[in-house]
Image (cartoon, rainbow, N blue to C red):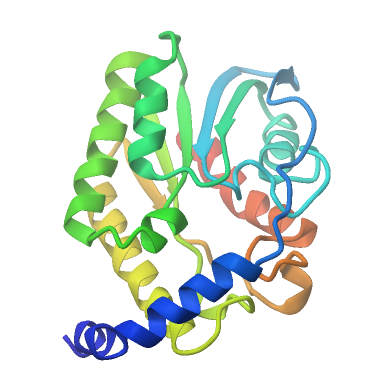
Length: 233
């Protein structure tokens, strides 16, 4: 309640800060390199990664340094991984679901979903976010045969250097609320796993724009995700 009241009271200031951030923020490109491939030896694992600019590797030059490349490298030590990345800057849960609906059907064993930051900045409520996530999960399962969905938790936006106070605090609270809703949704189904994004967002972990992960953060993130995906896939 205090968070909501603060947002209303600070609305003019927050809007001004948000507009300045959007206008002045450094625009970094998505990582270059393949977004599909087959790597490793062992039991087959078909993986689709769906997400926003962080999933697309903004903050590093090449996909091998980004989340997908770092994750596949770790999974490929144990499995033959056939993987596909569908990610773009600005993606929300709603736009990602529309993309899934347009893609041709194919079979995957597991899906990694990396979404939420743009839902926060779009002021999506936890209730609407939960419904949109549920619809996306159902499409992954029904159309693509995904047996297990892994949802990476939202980052602690209250630690993003780019954001000024009090905008940083407000977006941090909003991100935490969406993450709690996502955790609750995943807890209701054994075929979904919420994986908290427990990274130290220190300066060396952040890209030069102060908003996206740097190479060390992508490597640490992948090391966090890989054992859980291997265990449950």
